[in-house]
Image (cartoon, rainbow, N blue to C red; front, top):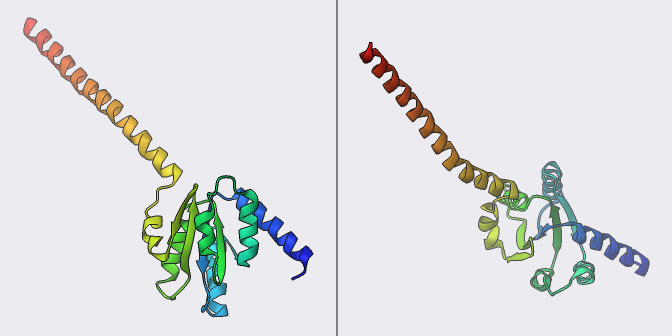
Length: 175
């Protein structure tokens, strides 16, 4: 790779990392070409971009956008063969890796960067699968907020029919 190609690749990776809230670093070595192609197809179907990178170029790209050392734990994962999965959904790659590994030995999770938190090691897959998306959390908050209002409204409706029944019974007695 020429110096110009390396510079261009660093610029491309810098743009990818700058625009990504979530990325996973995986090890898909020892997979056959057919298995890698299947993995890439699954990634494409799920809206995940998988890119095999040179570790030194990925480190340089991350260092160029780093402000307060937030990527320091990620650098440890950039050893050996690495593929990076860029995504807009924090847990989609974890689910994909988990499902893919039901029939294959890899990819292994080396690290995941999720909203400034780093999850290191393959044992974090189970934790990442259970992450709730922003939409899930908003939905839960809305349900919690609606619950008391729904209870009050149903109580008012039921007591309203009870009051109407009492008034009707009192009218009938008076006649």
